[in-house]
Image 1 (spheres, one colour):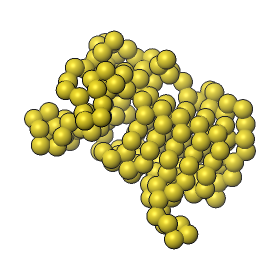
Image 2: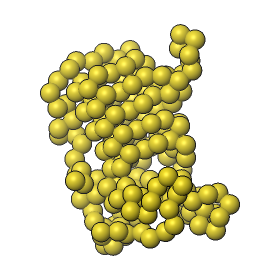
Image 3: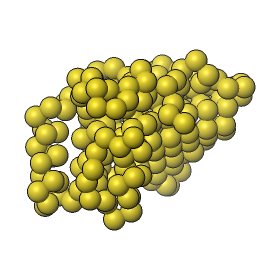
Length: 196
């Protein structure tokens, strides 16, 4: 099922981009198809993600690029600030309204980001770096992920955690500074509605 038909980006074909948007939409309660897209348009998190993906796909000075940038200014929730240089996998889910800042980082598939989250650059031990986040990661409200760190797959980051060190796969992270425990499938009840 393809919702959108447009010329491809330099690295993404139409089918790949459509699949990504389809997976993003499905994360919002299993929405699919045209009716699901219309419902999704009224969900600020999906609307912002959709417009961000279209802005990334179309160059700034093309008609479509300008069109999607104008739509984002008119219809996107203003407190979601995500760099167009961020590499975000399919199935991205913005939970609630509230300030979310994501710099030019790498985020895997099926990542859930709650409100008041910051993911960005930090200077540590003489290095400036940004996080790389794996697949199926749930990031709770108020969490801060900074620096040149790697967050593994299937990681649960508790609310108000400050993460500035690497986190292995299948871990629960909490605290300031964050500490983690390895647990089997910690995101089982938190990362839902994944499009196969």
